[in-house]
Image (cartoon, rainbow, N blue to C red; front, side, top):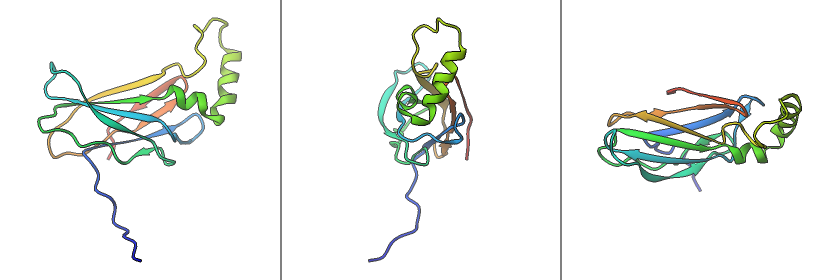
Length: 141
């Protein structure tokens, strides 16, 4: 039996998530992809994926012809609620925070939605740097 070492073809959009609060990739985060053709058009859900142990989504759906804008929706609340590594950090943060936090037990940002413009034929890698109380994104390579 032979094994191929060639990389699987990648779609026009990819992402990965790094949990900078613990210095590791964020595994198990659901990511949804939507697209639209024109800034006034309705969003069209295309599907999604879940981050792997490296924090990467390697199988996001292809974009339809005519796509001008893409939105990635990251469901991060469940990740922080289920993450054993962040449990102690959350407890410490809640202990040190003001008494009334609005009942938030998980991440301050339960969802992260990133919208960006695209051009045909280009690849877009959009990493998410994540903590329970903030995030940052950029166009990667």
